[in-house]
Image (tube, rainbow, N blue to C red; front, side, top):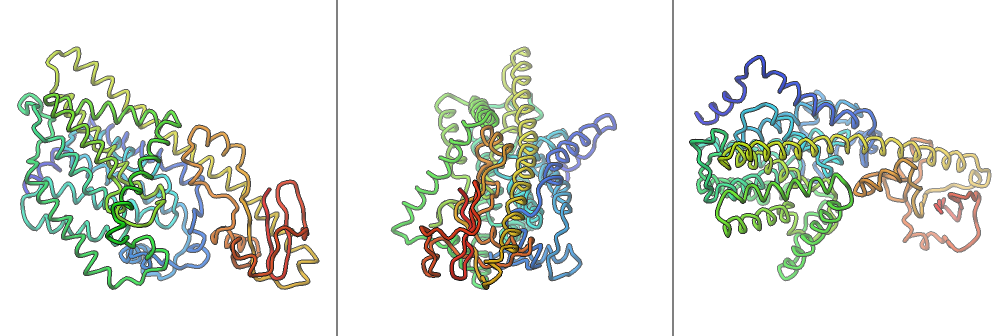
Length: 511
């Protein structure tokens, strides 16, 4: 417990002339969240919770998420849309995550809280998590718990603190399962970093100093016990939806190697494609390469090569246990491990830079070069957040136009009013807004995060806001309703879309 107290004390005891570091960290995180607050509303399944009031996280095995939401809303069992409160609540939670990361990597300046907060929660794959009006604080706090558990495992010596770490991991699994990667990734990277490092701790007071053998063994035990409790003691009580059961199902033992390989391949392909399609992605690649080389240079040549390989392997495996599942095509919001990987590199690299090279000029200019890389990444992530907010609002405005126009045409058409319709099918999807088209050229990965008017269940339900309550009819099921797509039955035919009615189904076709 003494080690924990000493770390906290060394961080929080600041002179008054260093308070600017606190304001810089708070300001950076506030700046990151502002476009989410201003522009992003009713993301994905938020519409169901906002209009129906059902939380339904327990159906995904996220029981504690339900409890936390009810506690935050004074026991109410019905969800209420209170945007942007969720995004505002994320600000202190994100800073708390940055604080635990700063403690984990033994940084003494409070500026690190802001830097690590942005790297962890501002990385492009976490923007989708921050978009959820109901879910974002829960996803953030689950990640924070795993970072805190990692800090306890590497710093503590008392047994009850390891129990506390295991409890945090178990609770986080019941809030948002993919956040578990925020625990083991920094543990692995610290182990690689500490392996036979040559840094002189006497000349480098900022050196990260842990006993790798001890904290790795303790972390493996804590992680294993937490996962076993979740799998065998808690999972049998879950009443999962068909979708959740499908996602969490394991392949047959004979199919496991192929599923593992396919998931790694899909994940790495996404990272490589996004890493070289934008200036921000290329900057992150440079940051990763430079950081890994500098960290690995703190030992002999062959050991350095091995460390480089191990660092890359951790990044490739950063989806963790999700790589063993039979489900393919996980959403970008599950790529939490990418942010944890980025967070771990910067303080370890800085620790090496503080103790490497006796020549003061080389040390000074290398540090300045690395500070420039970090500053560019932080600014790039903040800028990306604003671009995302702008493209979301632009596309949402265009979607509103199409939904309102379609609803008006359907509700006002005499031929449609004469019959009772029970379903709607949308073929294709609405076009991108001009702002979206331009933004996707710079940030291609955003295209998958931006919703268009389409025929998925959520897209059909959104028409209820415009007075049109119809059930979803999939394109593959149209024949069973007696709908012939090749017939000329258009009630409304416009250059951008057409509306037809056959039997009990309204068919929208985007051109």
